[in-house]
Image 1 (spheres, helix red, strand yellow):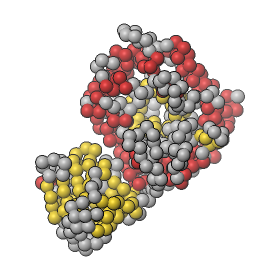
Image 2 (tube, rainbow, N blue to C red; image 1 turned 135 degrees about the horizontal axis):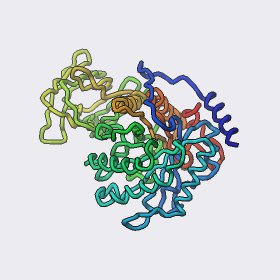
Image 3 (cartoon, rainbow, N blue to C red; image 1 turned 180 degrees about the horizontal axis):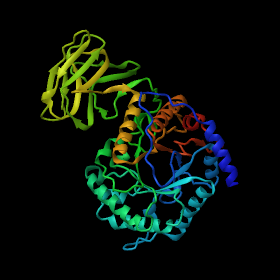
Image 4 (cartoon, helix red, strand yellow; image 1 turned 135 degrees about the vertical axis):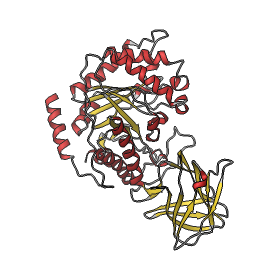
Amino acid sequence: MALLHRLIALLLALLSVAPAVELTNRATVPAPAVDGPQLDRGINLAGDFEVTPRRSWGTPIQDDFFPLVAERGFDHVRIPIRWNAYTGPAPDHRIDEGFFAEVDRLVDLAEWNDLGIVLDVHFFEELDADPAGERDHFLAIWEQIAERYEDRPNTVVFELLNEPVGVFDGRPELWNELAADAVEVIRRTNPTRTLIIGPVSWNHASRLPDLELPDDPNIVATIHTYDPFEFTHQGAVFVDPQPPTGVRWSGDAHGLDFDWADHSWGVEVVAGTRGLTVRFEDQWTALAMAATQPTTADRVELTLGRNFDGVVLCNFDGDDVLAFDVQLTRRRAVVDVSACGPIRTLALQSRSSGRVAVNRLALCSAECDELIVSNADAIDDLITTAADWASEQGVRLYVGEFGVLSPVDDPTDPESRRAWTAAVRESAERNGAGWAYFELSGEFGAWDAVNGQWRPEVVEALLG
């Protein structure tokens, strides 16, 4: 059966090869060599291994999931596991033997179906809240996992911690120190096994500059992307407040670059293929945004669809706010913002009501940073920037989670789901990055467990 699965997987992989849609002239980036599996095309088997109490929610991971994904052309699976829920008291923090045996079964199933498998430490909220207090617990978990699987083939991969948040967000150096300690523990028994490490703040690409990787030739850097959140998590009951449904996504439509969050007041914004149409509901309302990281610039460059009476504000969230009149010439304006210093927030504020087409908004010095970009370019810029960072570190990039939720009672538009999924996958592959879609089964799922069939808008976007 294993040979048959390999032949079917190879045939499907060959049939699924299609040319990537080019968004830029950027050439595909070769991946650094890693002594382990390529981790090219994966899928998360999210389920009750991440759930406590067990089976209170989440889809059980079934044995037949492994041949299912192998035969469709995936080359690895990623398993989110809440290890700390199955450990004993200090100082040993022994992992429950029965639970370990269940994980062994997953590792066996992956090996029998010629799949790589990523074992992930998932949902460790106590560590996020108290890194110092839970340090020994975390390292004890990794010592045991490493010893348990030291004789397994290199297709078994360890991911140190899923989406570090909490205290780590404000003090990323704590995560860097803890990750280095965990690598040291693992290397005592697994000197060359592939290890995956991601940045703080939900493994978001914007926090890669805060990540310091250990000097180790067998490390892969990971990011997760669910941008834009209001599209990928529409209708999510686990988000408060619950995002509205009915949100569509098109690669041609424009929005804010992912480095900027919408902080507008008193405006209605409609995305178009040439920019944004903004309806200022009253005087002094604003198209406003906040940067994920402060940035400096000499000038703001604007292109608007009509005459406009208003100002550009920088740092409107603090005492250092400055305002600059917008003087249009042939619908274009250049506003000197060199006095702003590091820009945290930026706004285009109107002195009157009415609709204005904002075709361009950019922060410029020697080069310009476009703040209004197409949706497809926003995704590509995020992944390409992450891949460039990884290349500078001499490691490969792995997009370990990306996906679109489709509520059962109000499904997400299938074509929007297809377009977004394809955009992420294509950008990852152009940049030499491996990926793992989130997830196989469930509301994000590529597999419809009720009807026993693949969801074409997802799986075809991933594999053709």
